Length: 203
Image (cartoon, rainbow, N blue to C red; front, side):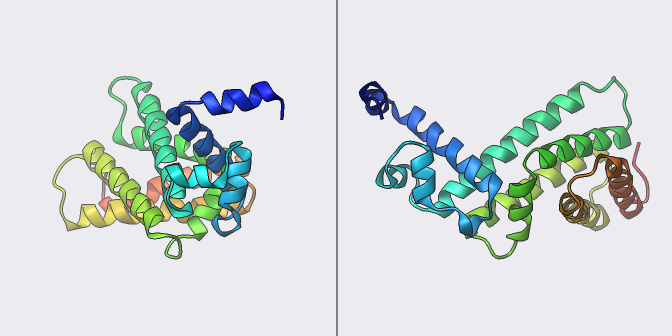
């Protein structure tokens, strides 16, 4: 490696270093299953020593959890932007539809890593499970806010069931290669699932 590159690495501030490590980890976890990713490989991609990676992240599990949390933040921001771009007075159904469209785009962009993440459910590190649960809580809260009205046991069952349904049918979609001609059928099925569970769209 050229001496100038080595000097630049030495001068890199902690936030820059952390960002490089996180980017390397994001790429690694997006392309292969969790158990196939090594901290050694992430360190090499980030042009850092493994000891330095461990200085920022105590374990692979904690690094994976941060990758997931960053992805969740990105998805939330993209969903909010898509929702805000809808015409004023759009129906609840149209709002949930645009959320689904945004989610499918997000999944398709990182299909290998997203599939590995879904297949890891119930078997992954506790840090990742905590992020997964928080993401679903956020989704349920967003649905409750849009649907409005009384939030009883039926509504809660509908919202939580919907999140599981969406991820299950998305997993099948990813296994098929994310075919474009299946997108609308998947979205309609997910909307029908939520509508049937709620009984109506409450506006």
